[in-house]
Length: 331
Image (tube, rainbow, N blue to C red; front, side, top):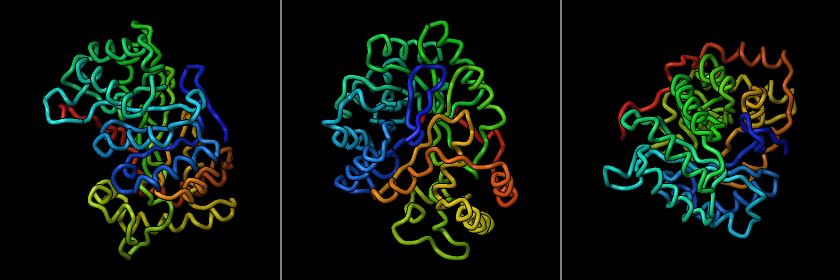
């Protein structure tokens, strides 16, 4: 496993990190989820990402149980706050009340005294940014989080947050956006701004919800028990499931074979070619998926291969920076 610094900090993270968004606590039985975490640890993954909202807080609890007994200094644990975790009006957003209450709930479920990175899961336009950043700074000073980050913030929001972080002297070091061969909306604005402000990208969905594994075929229904057959998965994947996209993805398979990689490995390696990316988050329902994806670490793709990839999928790539959106009001 290779490691990279996260932002302008001394914290190193594994190039491949493990996330439990759509699976743990909901779609996958706990024994299988724990087996995936163990497989991640065995392959050298040290970075684990979750959020309080995943599976209605159950995912954090599963991850806490899976990591129990591991040497705490030996892994990096990330979680997030913003989305609703209860029925009340203050059970959501980035108010001081919700942030402080949420970190306590996350630490309890994760069975730890601190998280390495605490992230704002979206931008909250209804709460003053100063209130949000001060709450994060207080959590860092209390030792309940070591660093702070954000997820799916626009370039302008990142700049505003970074300015306050400097004034508060709090380590603001990362952004967690969606990024893959097919979804490149962060390249024109978010990445340059993040680079200037000292933030790395921790990218989610490098396999484009599984489309870049090549398992979805044009003109055919999704295989049984895949993400595209679930209501939530189908919602996220609707744009990616067109025959044009799926046909072009199939055309990438010979390129992966030439490079000695599976299509999934090629896709994860592709995002890691971007020097602004510190880590690519993978998810898994089976340990075998972890073992396959982790082989992307340390892979170098030559310029000609990258050019050929772009020639195939260029017409279906989403690049519009306006697609980096955050809710204008709390959910």
